Amino acid sequence: MKRLGVIGGTGLINMTVGEEMEQSGLRLIRRDDVTVETPWGDVPLTCMTLSSGDEEKELFFLQRHHNGDQASKPPHKIEHRANMRALFDAGCEAVMAVCSVGAIPSDFPPGKVGLAEQYIDFTGVAATFHDDSAVFTSVTEPFDSSLNSRLSSILRSVQEFSADERLFYTYWLAQGPHFETKAEIDAIDTLGGHMVGMTMPREAKLARELNLPYAAVCISSNWAAGREPGDAGADLDHYSVSSQANKKLMPVWACLIELLS
Figure 1 (cartoon, rainbow, N blue to C red):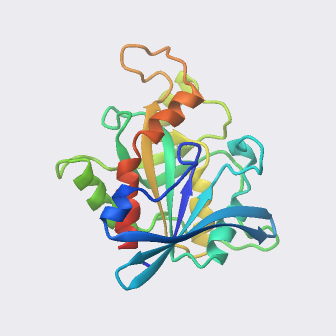
Figure 2 (cartoon, rainbow, N blue to C red):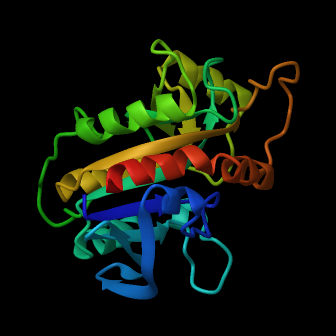
């Protein structure tokens, strides 16, 4: 793959080319910060040109909560159409999203990195480019199976998981910006959700409308409300959630390198 888009959230704001990438044979040639104009607003992208042997690769990083010089934009105010259109117009062949999530099942403890296989969105908020005409897009399989196959293999390897370790989960889209109650998490668990977050499925829907292959790498940054072992009443804190996500970037780098290789 020669042109890859990467979307990060509050846990992946400052993305640089580190030793992991250099050791893989990828070398940074140039880095530019550009602004892409879209009908839904301007989008800042960090564009990196990398060399891989005699080949050049391009990496486009988008911080999904971008908000100019102000604090990160809250999840319910993100203009996902602008973000996805900017990556599409940049010529990305695929998009890898990185998400911090609250985990529900016991086999997805904080620190583990998995993949989204399905999502559930009962928010009632539309995410579409087709407001003026009826266009119905199939999302039976919302994530690209080829990308997920490659990413699951590398995640299993770098995390030293056995062949029977679960890596695929269902993402439940919460409206935000509040975290969930214990009762909501119990209901989500009953309805088949394994992890909760406030953004990603809207990106996935728009990617499908653009026929843009999309996969979501999900970092378990905390137990969901009421699921903290030994402390079901523990409060959730945004800053500690982001800090945990920042500590688990090595598997994310491995995924990125795999897709650029």
